[in-house]
Image 1 (cartoon, rainbow, N blue to C red):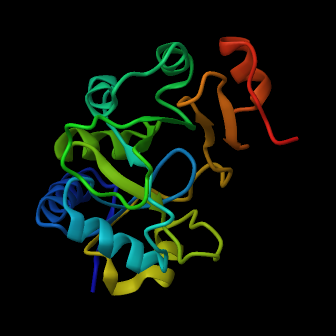
Image 2 (tube, rainbow, N blue to C red):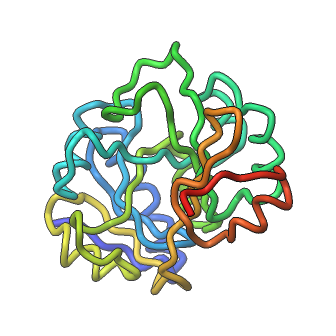
Length: 215
């Protein structure tokens, strides 16, 4: 049974972060709060852990998880380059609910699934998530729910869906919003909106000019 820690209590928060970081290092799964919804996370560089994450969600390799980072420096180490717009978007919206898709650093030995050489990166605006990420380094993180089910906005909802597949649950109370992050693809000459979310496309256009959409 996964252990749940109440992060509103300072002692439990500290213990939970220690336990969660240890779990990630040993290839186990954890549930953590973010500024959007709760996420299920694993060490991005442990293939068996990423596989376990996908299995816990009921997903295949065709839906690789995004990677959360605790610092902009960590993000830079994971990509070939940010392109002409990446740094401006990071400066404007990180930490926050913006996921940027870039070409992954080809020197890295990791396997997130069928990424086609790209990586989706985000730095969340949540103190518990950032504290954990600064201990663990980059984590593969997807919404803490079974595929096709509603995203979890509480640790209890995540536990109901994911149960014993998760070693540690970090409970920081209900998330303020269940709107997912906005995803923008920066791997092509023109930035393309892949998923509408918490940051309106008009705000993105205020930074980069034109953003292609399917609409």
